[in-house]
Amino acid sequence: MKSNLFGMMFLCASASLLGACTDTASRLVLDPAGPAPELAPVNSPVGELVVFSAYDPHPPTSGRNSEDDYFTDYQILTLDGRLLKKVSNQLNPLIGLGPARVELAPGWYRVVAAANGFGIVTVPVEIVKNRVTTLHLEGGASQPTEAGATPNNTVRLPDGRIVGWRATDRRGDTGP
Image 1 (cartoon, rainbow, N blue to C red):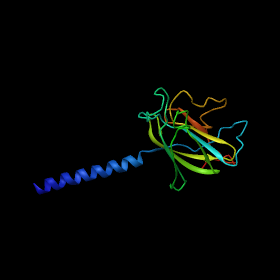
Image 2: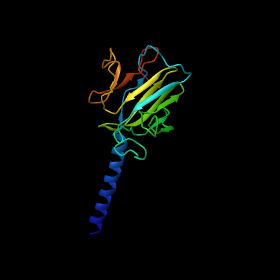
Image 3: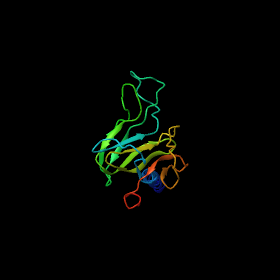
């Protein structure tokens, strides 16, 4: 009886550890994304990040229109994994008009956000001075449709939906 109880406890502990390992290992990491090849850059000494994360199924309701879409919050990490910023992902939390615009120093970061249909994903992003890097993880109709978007110059989810433009450095290599 004792060995049976010990075996069951060992099995439960192993299953718990396996579940914890699977949870962290199953996160999807996408290709590096960067700013769109836009004609008119923004006039700023920093760059901007806009993340259309998955829609929040339980948004706060006080003072908000129930027909608006609310994006889930996300995190910005340094490349070595340190938390840089938690982003409340609403441009205006009182009226819910789109995702937040975050100013960042030029460089490389990691965005950890919810993607519709894929759970939590990590996207390495390049922030460039005077440019906007946009990620589309919401799965809505507002996917980038600019002329010239191909599988070679866009970052995509496993189902083929476009997340954003692929980051390339000045030598033409993809990011970190």
